[in-house]
Image (tube, rainbow, N blue to C red):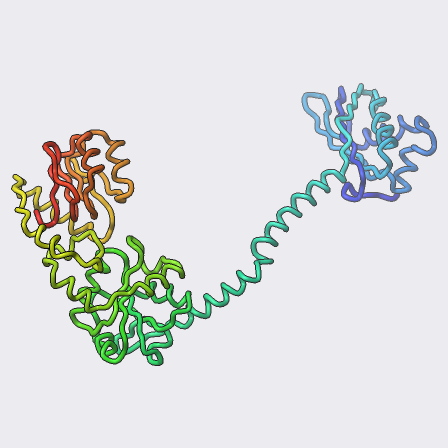
Length: 409
């Protein structure tokens, strides 16, 4: 007898059976063949259809509970939809199986091709997504990835201090000095190979010796940490030019356009030395304005003419404010304190005003790595904040808000 599997058929007839008694699986199959024999004519005789392979193996699954038998009947079919429907309807004429009453109900006729089509569509979507994401990148992406990998592989170590550097240190007459290994990698990625890193807070002897033979350009981060490194470099090495990343950014994160723009805007080291000589020691550390903007003689004399503020700070407050201000140098962040000088939170300067407004009360002091402007003073007045401690101030304090700078502490 020929058989077809459910996977090779076009339709599958799903039906349920309920029998008022105990019968076995062969009894059900015998009743299906016996009671439909001669009912549908010779063309739709179940035995002939199964023998020719147009009806598959009839699956009957039954179980007995409390003297009654229930189960499911599954019949795969490769007939057309009309003939399959006729065969399915013929099952429902069976009313007895053996000595017991029986009821067969056709639940549905499943079109196997529909479920296969859904699977094909979902799988095709998944394969296309993978193809677009990983298998077929744009040619430019391939070129960029290969170029980046090659340039990163070019990073070497120079001198007895094993400083991270590009491959063209000895061949180049001009050298760019950056702060760390990540800065070297970023410049290599954008095709600049005559770069070397200090790789620490102190200037190594290798770099000092190199500065005597090469034209040195110091390229530092756009924060106060960069200013401190410039000061140290100028003090111990023969630096020719100085440039900085955009304000608040680090060399390792800036784009190719920003790199080239910064290098074009480099300043002669002699001008930097002149400005450092005119600035008081403390003011060099806390000055908000860029180091490279030369202050006028009038502004220097006006600053020296302003008498220091007389503020009644407790020893604990002064110590806390001083330590926090030093801790914030270069972070462009701000501490928010309560009456007991506990830190309520640390936020970026850009979010300070919004944070103060949201707290509305309970804030005693604010310490920030930046300068105080009129807008910030007004916000602090409305929130009843007593002290604002900053690197510098563009405005004076008010009756409610006392402004303290690094010089005041």
